[in-house]
Image 1 (cartoon, each protein chain N blue to C red):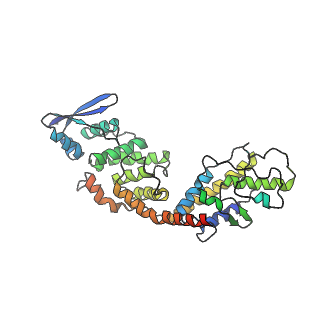
Image 2: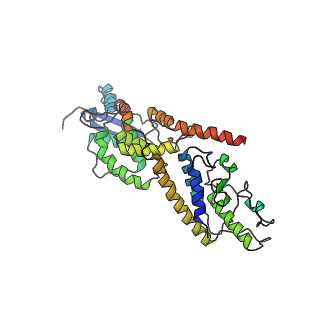
Image 3: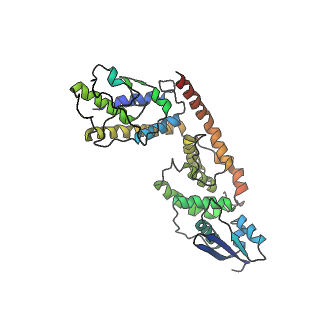
Length: 188
Length: 182
């Protein structure tokens, strides 16, 4: 398995982690990492900065799984699955590469989480992997609970602005009606 | 025996947007409120409470004057907003505190009234939840929960977002190859 080699370094609280990767593996699976590495191709090493929305562990996992295969029986909890989805957006990854992993983990996680409370995360994960039914279910829950003055999606560090805008738009009539009715009542 | 018809009527009032509880026009919000009310489950030995804003005991002819109303404390998990507390619910049998406050307070008021019609409990310590009453509360709450869920499905089945509307966003941000569907 020849291919141009490059070192990726990820810093964390407990120190740095690094891996010598085959650059070509990332070209069609994690475009942003590939591009970053290309700019450092002469140095032979790239230091990846962990963005605020992610953990070093997630980044390391992502690098490993893209460079090698994804472990067949990898079990992720809901938070980890959400992190993976965030990383996929962050680094412009191919969601299809992770689809089977995500599908099996999403399924069993639905039993363990409070879907109403985690609706934002579920909607985001479903959007990432293009699961139409799950996206509709989760976004419906989100519309129920979404109030313009309460950020129900705080638990999801990265949440697409376009999606947020759509939710607000969907929920606006209901919340406006409620507010106008409340002000009527307090006068009587 | 707590009459479940009582609660069914109250729920029906809530569902009807033209009814007495039309103050909240967002059915989803109303269902959320119901769900959080249902979390306010009584424990055996807890004192019964009556809502402070509501005076069924003082007004009814069977109430005693002594320790008639016990001011209801704010429960930790009750999330009913202030605007709801001013409303009374017209049900088949007169005012109740169901939608105006906690289901537990409503049930407590029922039991307190029942006790007072049986005998004079002036000077007695405040009545407390007993196992039988807690069991009845749970039975009613379970029914109510079921109805809340069913109503959610009725109202909102299929009202989620369409993922197709976000395909452009996905194509911008993700590495979607032509062969793959996403």
